[in-house]
Length: 267
Image (cartoon, rainbow, N blue to C red; front, side, top):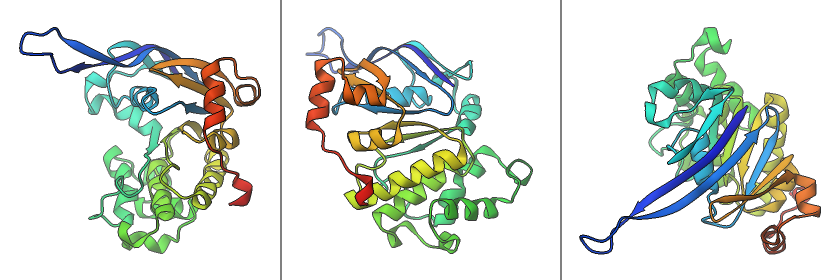
């Protein structure tokens, strides 16, 4: 489904003095990645390792300094503008880390969840149901009462807000769902509940997943494959079980030893 080759992203830094040489920071360096349809890929690494930069490039939210991204063999060109990437937005959804910051407090839940349908111009003919009906369907799918459409984000708990964010991410029936630390702002019990929900949605909606997480417990219980990142580079990429039981690089072994885990069974 997704094929990335040689992805590099550098950012310009302030010069030392008026005539100092131009300086650059490398956030991502020559990364190759394949995401197979139907798989669930976990991306782990310390803060600043390049995880979020990688998924932004995969989704066309930023343009690489070098390298290419293809979705179903079609080139993703972030420089082409929003209209040119309309097709990619139809195929993908994203859930961000902070459920408090990712929802507009001035909009009702119904408007928040329906926003992708309006932005993508999806109507009854494509959805099989009208927009209001689709919003109610997806709210039920994430464990919220359809009658909550008239309420506002401040009326919900953190876990409920992340369910709303998840509903918005899948309301247009994307094939690829990307999570950028979607559980890290939640307490342990709520994390386990959302993790169970993601697992159920993956099966029911036939989603391909790419999940960025500091929590090995999330990756272990949700993902088939693990990508380990360090200093902007992919240092290990293997099936989850192999990475957890037989890590090949010292950095991965240190990461596994230092990151706390959660046990969804106790959620």
